[in-house]
Length: 111
Image (tube, rainbow, N blue to C red; front, side, top):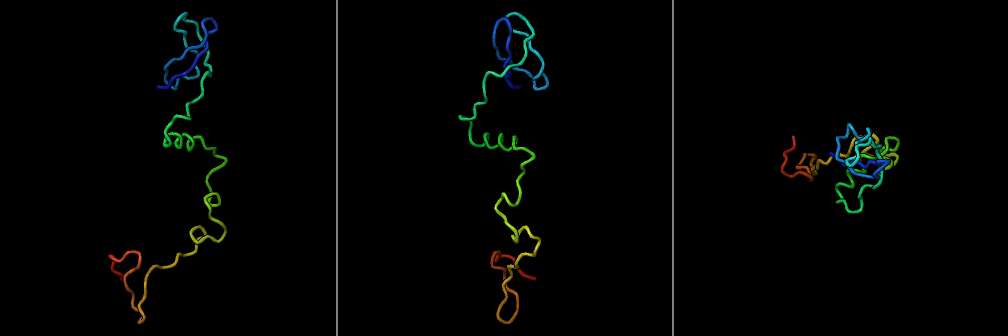
């Protein structure tokens, strides 16, 4: 469960560990029992996070109005992998026209 900050009007700020379903509801102050609204005292500690966690948070927070596109990935107009044109065959032909093993996968036998 995550920690949330709350601000008691009488005692000041405090942090409480609560389920996410109750994150927007007021919490009782541990000292005086007054219902206290949620407050934002601290920011997430991104500077000391490991790179994988920071990347995952960034991916989750990416706006839906700015998705990855083929242009943002470096593919331009006429790109062979995006244009729908068939890719060039990797089959190697001998001088007499017979097929030989493909150059990329020599362990595979051609038909």
